[in-house]
Length: 451
Image (cartoon, rainbow, N blue to C red):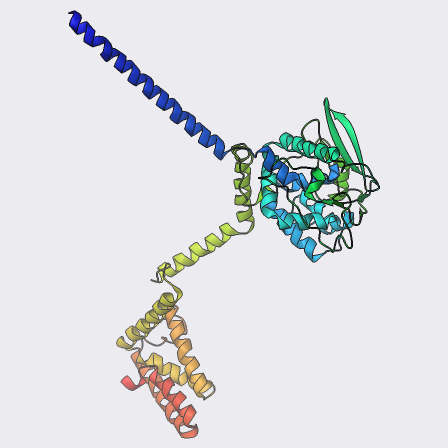
């Protein structure tokens, strides 16, 4: 009895140990699966965000807000950049009014006022999409990283007020933030700066992007303190209607300015915050689960609406009707064009052959006789034959005046054949060699010689 108990305890302990091991393995696998799912849907790291934001973090707040909104519509940005490239001298509110009938989202339309900005964004389409994805996923975090970069530039002595901009420190929702505004409200300078403007970069594996300024927009300009200013974009009264809500971690909209420049897309006075329009996303997918769940269905609905607008449903209906018609005529709708054409020729030949067997030889004679009322040349004779064959292949009935008319009357057929024979003899006597050949083709098309 003692011996049995002595052996039973180790076996129970072994079972418990195995169960624990299985539990631990299961938890590890579950943790690995969750980690993989999280990694697949992870947001960008701080160093990645800083890298993407480096070229625009020191823009005036109003321009920065427009750029952040526009990045969520990569397809529209591409189209606007192409328009801007074709109109390099269009700037300011006047340029925005020129594109008011374009289908692009208004945030993108506003950027045609700044062709140098669109030129930069067009050079980096992948980064535009990534930044837009980051902004949609977590706008507050993106805004916070902008402030981190501004503080770095300020600490390096490269961010201060001058004749181009006004830099100030303000409190927003208990946070100290750096605000950048144009020195003159309707004159906006677009700075281009070297990465050194931020001092020593903290992430060697993620160096800040640098966009060389195009000479067209920055003629003869030189870096001063790591910054090139170029010429001001003047005449900006309503084109910049966005603003940075640093305390709320998102972008605001000045409704009055928006409605003044977007006269055909008025919004309600209560729409003071940026709301992404999934319909203008096009076919560009959303990166993270949150954005897919929030905007994905609207994107699919928008795609269906675009297909209906383009007449896709109508074209499908037309194709279905055409396929049914071909099927009724004995042709395979799935066949290629050559096969379908061959099927029509075969049906035409069969129709003529069957008519000949039923005493329809005169039908061909009618065609020859009818040649008396047409130009007596080879081309006319050939056209008559082709026209008769085509009419036959169309499936026309005997009640119509076609190449097979008179097939039901043997006497009429013979009379027609006689007329055809007389016509051929006359043509051979008065025509040249070429016309005689044409007459022979006209006669050979029917049953005149089979009489």
